Image (cartoon, rainbow, N blue to C red; front, side, top):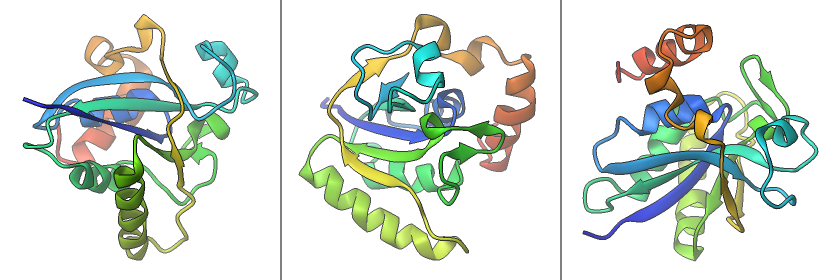
Length: 169
């Protein structure tokens, strides 16, 4: 069974991780950092907004079960791609909406998907589409955050309502 990867950012990586890890065909989701200029950044460095990195997830998936296009469809539904450098109370370039493409095929699909999704929103989409240059996994305590911290206030106030809205939980 062959797997492929998708790298997406839409606010806090904890939220995206919780959404995507529940999808059939998704083998793993790793929270991390990408899209910036600093090698091997820390969470604290990324939070300054000075590294250029966004909080992202890297999704390993089975393309026979779920396609890249279907992952992108979910991506548009699980965050607000019309707010520049912001998702809810999370503000800064590290929370920007971004699709980091692994190859030209993903780049073309991402551009098509963004154009198709635009009609679903009243405001213009500000999602950046760029080639992935490097992905840096986040620190271990950021991995599987929702699964390990369901009762934490952020999980109760932000993640759980998002999952319910998407009818995942």
